[in-house]
Amino acid sequence: MSTQQVFAPQIKIPATYMRGGTSKGVFFRLDDLPEAAQQPGEARDKLLLRVIGSPDPYGKHTDGMGGATSSTSKTVILSRSARSDHDVDYLFGQVSIDKPFIDWSGNCGNLTAAVGSFAISNGLIDPAQVPTDGICTVRIWQCNIEKTIVARVPMRNGEVQETGDFELDGVTFPAAEVQVEFMDPAADDGEGTGAMFPTGNVVDDFEVPGLGKLQATFINAGIPTIFVNADAIGYNGTELQGAINEDPQALQKFESLRAHGAVRMGLINDVAEAANRQHTPKIAFVAPPQDYLASSGKHIHATDIDVLVRAMSMGKLHHAMMGTAAVAIAAAAAVPGTVVNLAAGGGDRTSVRFGHPSGTLQVGAEARQVNGEWTVTKAIMSRSARVLMEGWVRVPGDCF
Image 1 (cartoon, rainbow, N blue to C red):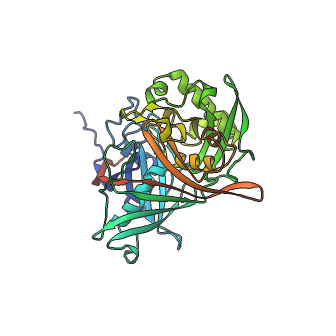
Image 2 (image 1 turned 30 degrees about the horizontal axis):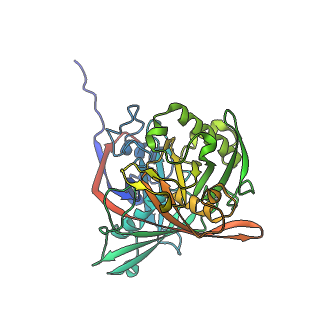
Image 3 (image 1 turned 30 degrees about the vertical axis):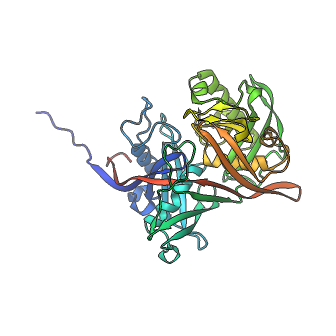
């Protein structure tokens, strides 16, 4: 007589599926997670991997909530802040698509725009500080990078206002504007010494095997980022995703740049370690303004922008721009002599409008020199956020 195998039933976990900026992810309250997953470690990672549907050798995330891109394979865990001067603690996990791996080394600036909204709607903010109408200021402690972020969330009739006429290139429909301020964003890798430029220079000679010597700016602001000139690596800065993501040799080239740059920045000791640090650093290339056609078909004119920027995320060209990389762009543009600043025309500036594959974005930064070293006190950008679905996610009870 055959014995029927018994499988663990599915369990359900309260969750909210949200868009923030040009990304979307699954949001959880820390207290709603199973007890084993309320602490960092293997159980938490296995649970979140299963929620997203990774690792998926088919690259589709058919059996999970992920969208099979770096912008849509994201998880967020929120709780009331353990710090008296903050409202909410925000932990971000970037989920690999085809590997059993979650990168906790950096922040997601796009999903940051949704953190305040979620916190208000899910009772994580003191009701006394939430206005019936107007703007609710939410002070966020970003746990991955140990930095303060301030979100200004619009309220109407006691609820978060999500609808509006603010348009964000890379997002199909308009929504309410959420202003996000990244306070003191330098050295955001969580391991830095506080220096915005880890090499001590605003531009360096960067030797990469097979590519030769490049001019590069290594910066820790928003997220560790390596900027190089587009023409130095065979591009013009107007590329869309297909030009790079469908070229295996190009992807290998960018990963080599990223790995060697991570060593130069002191984030890893050997290029082999880069495989276990996929989320950071980012690699981006810049060029002076020129006309191009965005992925939506929108005509972007050289006169509309100050500089062209394309950035890689989790091994692929991003469809728009990561929020944290936008902070790095703003900071680098504000410092005379960086690769970004020179591509934008040089000189002093407090804001920059850059062109990305989906359109344009304006970001601002306040930079100053202290004892001969550059620092950024604040970077500001506008994003939007919206709840897509709320309820429960279900996962097999033996998956973690």
